[in-house]
Length: 307
Image: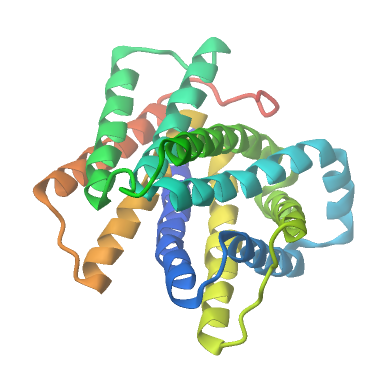
């Protein structure tokens, strides 16, 4: 893969993370101001995204490919729906900081260990240093926003950590499979199939909580933004990048998400960033750039069906 292709793929993954970071503020707004549940937000987000993607990519020749990859689509789409839900449920129990750190920092470690075990990645000092820089930077950016909620009981703490670990494992699995699907189907059809599955999975949450579509115009507009920007466009960019990056580079690139949320909070809500947060941002950006260069130097492309 050329330096230009690697840079484009890394930019796509970072762009997806940027859009997800903007979505974090919107989700907080919908929960705090309009009383929407995480299940409802996730469901409508995927529904709007699926409708848009289907309008763009649902063509007769596409369906044959989707049927051939049905098992992978079902598994990856389910992981995509559930890792977000587990993350939200973890936040509801113990606050945002710890679940965010676990859900975002554990996947790069998991996918790197798996890649090394399968011979797809070489574990050397440079890779370890880059991962440490990325994860330390993420911690510095996130931890200022609070630790475990002071009202959390021991049982809630255990549940929150378990849900956050589950979110991380599910996200790692989704990351590993999404590149395979993008190579097999193309980024557009693959993203469409994944989003349709995710919407169907989130629809099952109606069995235990109502899936409410808001009646006021402002929250409807925010849900449309989530569906178009953070489900359709972001997932399309992520899936395209996933086919061209190693899983390690892909998961580290998406650490841009919490950085985006923090920077937007500073710009829009008047929150100030500490020196430690600026240092964390610099470490994250340096790690992402280093992994992009590492991917570009790889001698041979990744086999299309190696997951």
